[in-house]
Image (cartoon, rainbow, N blue to C red; front, side, top):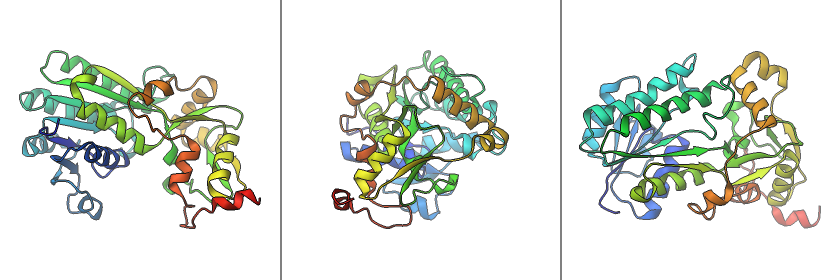
Length: 310
């Protein structure tokens, strides 16, 4: 549907940018985004009609952005890691601000809303708070919109391939190694942010088809050694797998991630790759993602032809 107007909250985030790009690839033209600072360099790089100021902690700004954009379809997510001293309740309140803005102030305007959650948000130990906070947002979304004209969809990504090159979390992709939180001999499910964007865009663009549905986003399932082999083939450099952080560091200083890692090792995500590929047929696995990335974090390009001589 080309006459819909889309509003992407957190437009400068990885998922926000990916959703904007994917919407444009589908032919959408009326796209707006929000940012806490529309004058920032990252906001100015967004190729959208307008970047509007909105901050979840300032609910009137959320309402104003929706009304000014004249959006009929909205995508939003909540980010535990942007919260000072995060808690389950604090993240829930961020999502509640968007849902309340839609249902209490803009229900006649907004036709469809998509929430970017996380895989198995309500199917893991409650010690993984940054999952359950999103489950709380999901539950509130369904409860509030089930009595509204506005329809909803939810996308639930698994672990991000992009976190394999994430210097903000002390995990830049360095030549010869790939690192992740878990131990090597267990298969972990991953998805590229680009493919989350494609899935989110599909839920928005084809709203009637996906109304009331939840989509798990997954591109590949790999052990640590399989990640290293995929990187070896993509880069032309022999690579090994390493754990990103010692387990005792996680337990002492990153308790939420510690419990998430234990859960991933003991049971993990239940997302089905074939189901996601019905919506995103070209979803990338590890080798495809590394190949598309094409370089180490320092900018040195991969030389995959060297792999034949290694």
